[in-house]
Image (cartoon, one colour):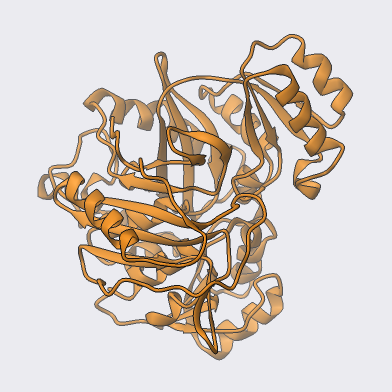
Length: 438
């Protein structure tokens, strides 16, 4: 089997994927398309457009790629995995049918309803007039969501009627999110701590990676607009009953509903949950690793991450998982695949963003990075670029500072210590990431 791997994408998630793959004892040759300065540290960046499916297939054949891992949602929604399957190239990531779970929030709600899984009450609309009429029946606050994928920014929690009216108009009339916002969900607002659960599955067998928590709002104390994510930590400690409840009331029914509908799924399914007083409810699905959740979950994986992805892509995840036991790690009962996680280790990532994000911001500022890069702390590149003048900012979320330690507090201190030694004009970050872990 070829040990050549291609990672599709160019963000922080893809740097985290490449970094984890590089630790494989099989020493794979890793390519990233198009990659970023971070992926170039452990692999080779290639000028390849993920939207050009034929070019991706041709590259895989020329380089004898034995596994493709698709990072972002857009290539998955567009069916890149289907083209790779037709070319007999193993791919970690669902086809277009499975990716609809992220690409169409209304479809995701249909799956949840069919599976009998708890999710907030909603209605879908293409007309702002109809949406406003339904709004009359809703209690405030209310949640408005663009049905399509919008890089984590197509959601607004509206506390007042004018806020809801404005966001509905932005989606349906001003078309702020393009085609992704031409249909929206008007959803009841539920309350409780959020939780991210990454489910690795080959369509039959599955494993749950370490539960994590993302901080989506731009401002401290969860204020301001939603972003793609300003930081995360893992694992989130849950009660024994809750571990089992998430598996039996959410994961098992959803995977069974996908099989019932004959929707193949090989890759990772991200379930965004809210832990309400009445139990976990599903807020959203993503069809890929979360960003920044991947930055804190992947470093906790025991064993060979390359083999985990390869066995998933080839439909033999069940046999791979037999090599891991809960007893070795002290993982919780009722959490399938608990043996994959090192529960004695904790990770925190804090995102450094450009001033103005998630709105307009200036690119091209020189970046000065800290020297630390070891098993306890490192930098993940997201929106960076290399120029003749050196490393510069090239995105809203520029980089992530990751700390890892047996102590949650020490992991957090390391992450923030790295940020203190990181400099670029307009650098902003939240100072309360992982401050509360319950």
